[in-house]
Amino acid sequence: MSLFWRDIKLAMRSGGGALLGVLFFLAVIAVVPFAVGPDLNFLQRIGPAMLWIGALLSTLLGLDRLFQAERDDGSLDIMLMQETPFIVTVFIKCVAHWVATGLPLVLATPLLGLLMNMDLLSIGAVSATLLVGSPAITFIGAVGAAVAVTLPRGGLLVSILILPLAIPVLIFGVSAAYAAVEEPAPFLPPFLILCAITLFFAVIGPLAAAAAIRASTD
Image (cartoon, rainbow, N blue to C red; front, side, top):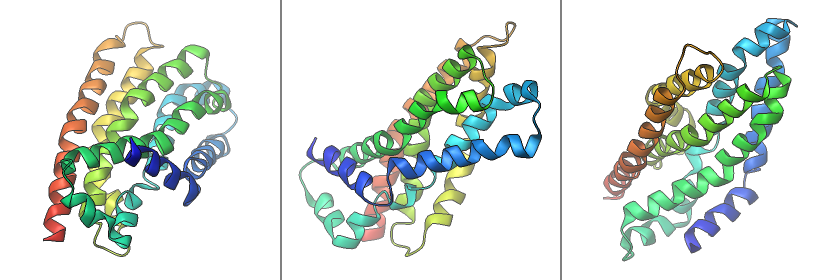
């Protein structure tokens, strides 16, 4: 819990934290009507996909700094030597990072959905899928952040490593959101697959990230 609250406070103090991600999310969604035109029906149709793309890009902003501060001040070596398994430490850091940066995106989704002329059912579906699926992006990003932790400017490398692995999350998140408003398409199967993906990466992500950090410090 001490590590969790410490990371929450650091995320809020450095780089704008949640505010930076929400502002970028808002910027992405706000420019969509200017790009596609004032057709409200078309905006409503592409709304779930654009919200998911905006949330994905916003989540990538701070992932490269997930372990960078600990690497710079030497506390990462102390975390490696403590009695608590390092995998648990990585998991807690990922959860804290999602609470500080991912959860505000979910909370901002209803307001941004109104900008896309989406109805309440579509907004609720997108919010639910983001709540379930966005943690998977954080766990995937932990692996990229761990690989690039020794690099002075690894932000681009983290994004390149994360995006291919995040595509399934995006596919099933958007599919579940559209299925909630389209009668023939079932909502539950893609939503449950999205939950399974998040649970899978909640195990694999910290494990791979811990192994990458240990390899980089040897």
